[in-house]
Amino acid sequence: MTWYALQYKPAQGDRALQHLHNQGITCFFPKITVEKIRAGKRVKKLEPLFPGYLFVNLEQSDPMWAKLRSTRGVLKVVGFANKPTSICDEVIRHIKVSPDSVAEQGGIKPGQAVYLSEGPFEGIHAIFQAYDGEERAIVLINFMQKRQSIKVPVSGITR
Image 1 (cartoon, rainbow, N blue to C red):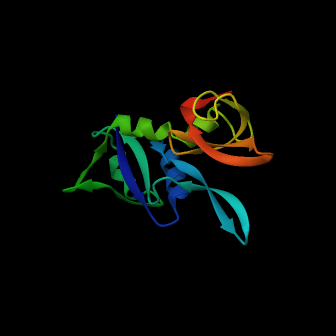
Image 2: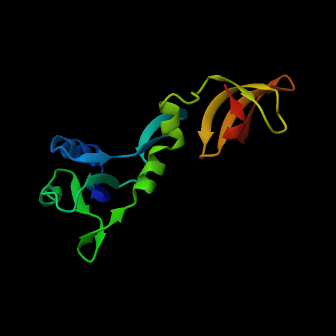
């Protein structure tokens, strides 16, 4: 089976995902947690990693292809020269192992106590705040009698 991208109608990604699941199609709709300021307050919100697109896993000969375009919420299959363009499994695997998904699958969680094992702050205890990309994390340390937020390599953090 191969992965393909679908473009969904504006603001209908969850609807398209639900209807595709109802048809028994394997789907992937990656989302990330973003922090925004609304009415002067920080709010965490789950948003699509690729706004406007979701992924389906189908065989080229699968009869479900005929139903994709008429699925509620789906706009079109992404392709070139009237042929769907496949996406490498490795790319999908890489997206699935994003920092947010690692945190959700039992990795280091916000508020958890950690120990910095390398770099200029080696040996200091800290509080994990969030991932900053794939290779860095934001932690809080007590420095000069004040809590400081710093960015450190993920490889230098231990529980």
